[in-house]
Image 1 (cartoon, rainbow, N blue to C red):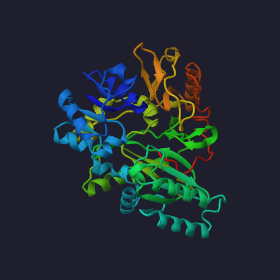
Image 2: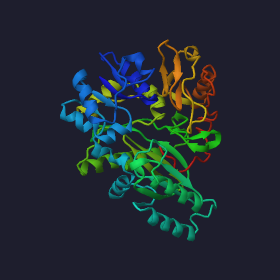
Image 3: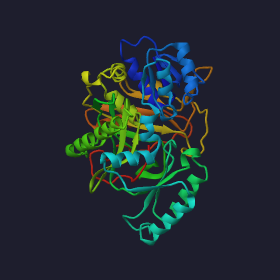
Image 4: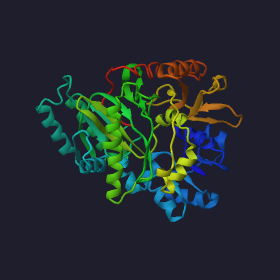
Length: 439
């Protein structure tokens, strides 16, 4: 089996795949210090280059390729491997457009009757600025409570292409940033969207395009500092399940959002196979979609996969064989909490190469999933990214899992290590969350 990716999500996937006694061989490309514990890393692969991936598949001849991150999915790696006759766990580029184009996703939701924020998209900066001035004149951008909008780059931007704006000046700056090339081709089209307020939750599901196996709900913490302050990141921590999410709302999301989107994609000739997850905002008017993603979230994967009782290998094979409906996917009832440790300065500039110590001191049963970490020629574990590692604990309640996770975080150190101290602090409460964050 070949696993594509190099982050904490892929370490968690490698760990979960290796738990199956039927796994003969696992290659991770390019992999990281964690995936190397479960097989062989193939460094240097450009995972978003379909031809490079196809060439590697011809050389290794894996019986299954599992795609972790969004970039190779959007680039059409699954389509290219299908030409080679290789089974792929991951959607085609056409199906993955539900993530790679926010404008397409908005249209699909409209056709499927899925509730989401109202939005307009623009390919011209002057037209976008004129629209913003109209919103400001109407009082939508006056900085008052309940006002504001969200500016989003249309394409993939590694979670960085979303700006929540309270004032006209902030909104205009966000439009200029996107059209000015900050997000490359992803910013050549921009959405200006109604700002949703409430609490966020992530709703993941496995699907073969017809059958759907829903995962437990989870909650990510995006801003870099405690209290949801500071710029958005790739995710500073996560917990599952959210005790505050009502069963009726969970059922509505599964039925009216996830299942409706999968059915609509199939009806439009874009059957989705892999993991689909809508990021949801629980508003005063009910659940609303923030955006769709066509793969496991990160750090959501790190807290969800430890709850998966059914071997991940079995799930991947059932999806690729269109037999997911025949598989009873089981989940652990325990709660999980993951705390991300990051390099100083992240999500801005940050140093690399700091030695990481204390990983071997964590409790048995506590998982440490590496994101930006590699080993040098002497075997030392060094920082190699902004988000360095995620410490994940499981227990009978979120509160117990949280305490266990932080107890183990305190045993790990590297120079300038930063982490939030409030992950899952309000997991069962009713405090309002952040608005409009991207994953």
